Each structure stands twice: as structure tokens, then as C-alpha cells.
Amino acid sequence: MKKNELTNSTPIYISSRRKFLKTAGLASTALFTGLTAKNNISNNLALSYLKEFCDFSELPNDFIYLNNGTEGTMPECVMSSLKTNLSKWTRNPTYSYELDRDLGKRQEYNREKVGQFLSVDKNNVCLTDNTTMGISMAIMGLNFKSTDKVVTTNQEHPSVISPLQIWRSRQGLRLEIQSFPPPEEIRSMSQNELLDVLFPNTSALRGAKAMCVSHVYPTTGVRLPLRALREKADELKITYLIVDGAQAIGAIDINNVNERVNNCDFYACSGHKWLNGPPSTGVLYIRNSEIQPPEFYPTLSQRMIRYTDGSSNYPIAKALQIRGCSNTPGFTAMVRAMKFVEEEGGTTIIEDYILNLSHEVKNFFLTFAPNCIISPYTDNALTSGITTFYPFKWNQPQIPIKDKKTATWVSETLLKRNIQIRPIGIPKTGTSYGSSEKSYALRVSTGYFNSINDIELFKSSLKDVLKKIN
Ligand SMILES: Cc1ncc(COP(=O)(O)O)c(C=O)c1O
Image (cartoon, rainbow, N blue to C red; front, side, top):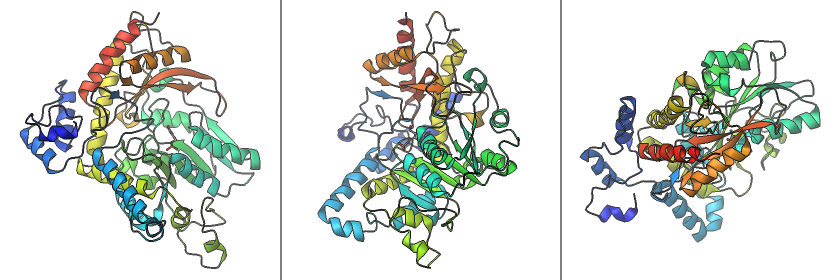
């Protein structure tokens, strides 16, 4: 909805992308009962729009953006927080950097707010530029020895692969790389089946120093629930559970007991993807706020001195926070994005909404091309807002097409119609870490700003485009 529509006599909810608490509730019901009424909204809801206006109004109404997995888009209140704080900084830069509660280098206030969102203490929270930075702080901070081993999978993002490769090259760290089963198997697996295949109780995995995995995989959309991961790590007597939450935060209900971040020893995530915060924002959660050298080093920090001058109780998250000038207007806006989630009714409502849209996408493939869907659909515990599928010729839906050229062509052709999804490479089962041997699929991210109407338009356009593959 455009801002100036507020002054229009047309009911303001008609063209809105916005999903308020009640919208989400109604939309969920509609989806479960097979309805597709986007605008089944009461007048009460229209009033709530007027009370406090925060919509995804910058995203053009005719742009069907289904790529939250790469970048989110800010709702108006988040962008306005960013602009206001950039102005505040500009008016008084030195005060802002040194002392301002929101913009200062120590970030005590924003860390506290992020802590509340994650249900943890501020001393467990360091604000980062992105997931890559948080993961690197965690993996490079630990004191791995050449005799240590680390369990990981063949589908990690380069932000996890890269620091592990540094340890392997420098120190000879052993990596136990567990292959995901092929997509044809993953899609109908249950949580327990998948976790047992990925992390069997074998001597190769037992006693590893760390398990480095993702909460939600950008390749297949598989979600690995955090409590189940913790239980696996404990069963295998693995010391540290390090989780890449880039594709989870803002989409997964972290208030659900199965998904609390405090199941992990380190959890790194982005503010700029599913949370719809600004660019260059992220969070690193560190469970043991008292961890310190030689167990863990603050690798990107100006405060190593605190651990060498005899004062030993300096919180490591604080040491990692103080690292020169950061994007503090962005952090303040990220906190606003978290408040937006609460205003919408909280993480459970948001996850529900996102999953319902993703079920609509999954149902399309289950109906027309069940061989081509990759993302899991039988066990809800494994599902996320990401749906990946192989393209196919509309008249040959039983044959998935797995090359890069086709996936890229479909994605580019949809983009010409103002629909953004993306091609994604899926490492082949049994290939080495970071291998370029991949099959290529398409990824649809159903975000909180999307509507059922967006999904309907996506499906009909995709059908048209698939008919043109020759
Ligand atoms: C699983 C995963 N980890 C890490 C990243 C990198 O995220 P960031 O840009 O926040 O560092 C991505 C980005 O797509 C991702 O999908």
C-alpha cells in the first residue's frame, strides 16, 4: 500500500501487502480450508492500520518478490528508524559514536533489546554485520587443536565452509563432512530419519569438538530443529553446537521450545533477510557469556587487553562488540524490525503465515510435478519458508531438469515478468567440501510481505514459462 493511499477514501486495506496479526490468522485459516481470499479482512483491521502504519510500502505492488532468502525488504517503520538514526548520527557524530544510547559503540541498549527478542541476556548477544561475521567470530574464536575434529555437512554455506577450511589448512583440523541424502529422498523424510542419516552415532563423529550446521538450508529448505540438534550433539558428546541461522531468524518461531537459540553454543544470523531489517545487520548469540581465552578468543575486537590485564570477568560478547565504528543506525533499525515482529503478534504468527504460503507453493508441485519438488513436505518439523524444485517441461512433469542453464533461464524469464525467485546449486551427495559438482534447482522464498495473490500469480506465470522450455 502506498503512503498516500491513507488519505484516499478507498478502504486502505484493499491493496495492502501488509499482514497484520489478524490478517495472518485469517489467511492461515483460509489456506487450511482451501480458500484463497487475500482480502478477507474485517473493518476492525482497517482501524488497526490507522492506529500505527507500518507497511512494506517501498516494495512496488506489481513486483512479486519471492527471494527473502537472499535479502529481505524493510517495512516503513524500519526504514524510518534507519533514516532518523542516520540523521541523528550526522548531526552529532562524535557524541553518537562515543555515548549515544542507540548509536554508541558499546550497543548495550540494542543488545538488551535483541536479547529480549531471543529470550537471552544481553551478555549473550553481539551485534554483527551479518551471519558471515558471526560465524567467523565463533569458529575462528575457538581454540581448535590439530587433533580435533569437527562435524559438518556437505550443504553448508561458504560462510561456514570458509573458516573451517582455514582451520584445516592452518592447523590440520579434521572435518567429518556428512552428506545429505539426495533430494529425491529428503523430501519425504521425517526429522528423526534425516537426523539419524546425517549424524549417526559412529566413532567417526563421537567426541568431535564442534558440530557446524545450519538451522535452515538455503539449498533444500530443510530445517533442522535446534532442540533435536542439541540432543544429537549431546548424544555424540560433541562440545560445541555452532549453528548458522541466516535462513531462520525472522521466519522460524524461536519462541517454540524446539527452536530456542539457547539450544546452541553459538548461533549466528542475519537481520537483513527474513527479519526484513536493514543491510549489514546480524546477531551472534554466545551461550556461555563467561567463555574467554584460551578457550575462546575475541578475534574481531579492540578488547583482548581485558583478558591479559588480570581482570578476567569481561563478557566476551561485549569484547566482540567493541571493534571500531559499526553500522549502529542499522542495529537500531534491526531492533525496530524485531519490534515489528512483536507488533504483528509475534514469531509464532509470522512462522505460521510464512509456512502457509510455502505450503501453497509446495502443493502446486505436489499436484503437477511431484518428482520435481526437493524441499521436505511430510514432516512439518523439517519445513521452512524455502521451497526448492527442479524445473520441468509442462508436458513432461515427471522429468526434473537439473542443469544450471535451465534454472537460470526460468528465473530470468520470470524476472522479466516482475517475479523474483532464484536459481540455486545443490551439492551432489558424496562430493567434497565446497565442491562445484551440483545440480541446479529453483528457490522460492515466501516472506511475510507476500500475499496469497502473489503466490497465485507466481504459479500461473511459472506454468507459462515452463511451457516454453524446449
Ligand atoms: C545459510 C546461509 N548462511 C550464511 C549466509 C550469508 O549471510 P550474510 O549475508 O548475512 O553473511 C547465507 C546467505 O544467503 C545463507 O543462506
